[in-house]
Image (cartoon, rainbow, N blue to C red; front, side, top):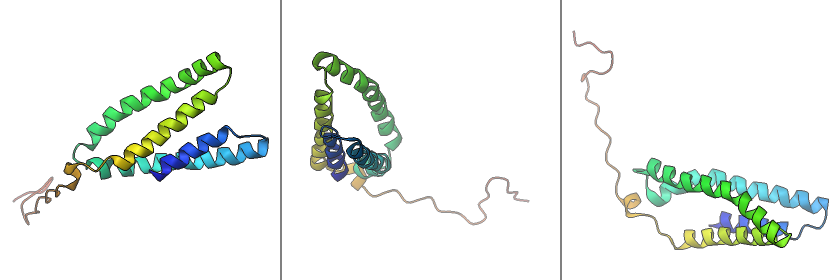
Length: 135
């Protein structure tokens, strides 16, 4: 949740850039925050949903993620064409990150994640395996 709020603040900082030095500082900050998202996302999913259906959940969400990533620039371009500025697009982006933080705050881990994991199968001594002969 904190990472989403920090990312939103980095995007909001873009609206206050006055010179090249500030641009570099804001770009570095934004890079660190979005880099945190890339690192944290695979760690957060199993914590919320468990590991049993993680592949299916990730696959479904990636479909929507790719769609939004492809539609984002089109939305920003439409905002610019309509208003002659990107301010509305940046504000929308800040709002979506804050919504993400809020949802992470209120969503609780699934019951599947809280259920005990099955014990691994026991290894039987002399039970044979790949390439072993029983001669």
